[in-house]
Amino acid sequence: MASGIKISDEVKELYSKICMTSSKQTKQKYGIFKFSPDNKMLIVEKVGSYGDPDSDYDSVISSLPPNDVRYLAFDFDFVNKDGTKKSEMLLISWHPDNAPIRQKMVCASTFNALKAALSVSKNILEGDSYGEVDSKAALEKVGGKSLC
Image 1 (cartoon, helix red, strand yellow):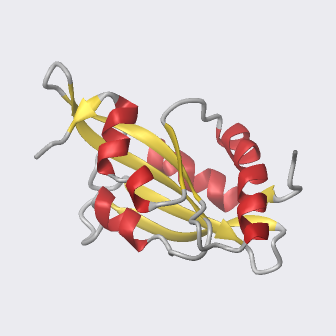
Image 2 (image 1 turned 90 degrees about the horizontal axis):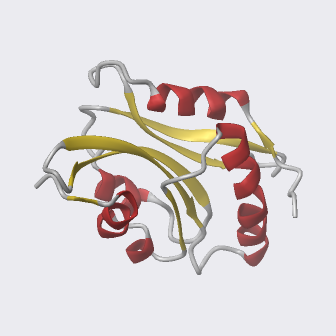
């Protein structure tokens, strides 16, 4: 079921910047997306860069609201099974239990449109509790282990 929500060009451009393979000093680390006040468009709420305080994965996850839906695109750093440092793009749908039912329905029906607009087919997480999208869940998704 399509929601009819438009994905803003700003969201698409930010996602491209996060995916860029350039230097991490100038690269965007993550973007948080939310619905516009009139619920007609998906817009950028917050952007984080490498080196920003609180730009680590768990800090960003804990900043997601406990009572409203969001999407998160995050350049996730980890160590693969061979011991090599890697990064993979994660796309997360956040729809907490305490969010209004209508917002959760709109979030679910818009997620396929977002994935299509951004050409995302892997490393997708969905969660209604912080434990479902924490660093452990992200590491399981990308098949890696923590940098620490």
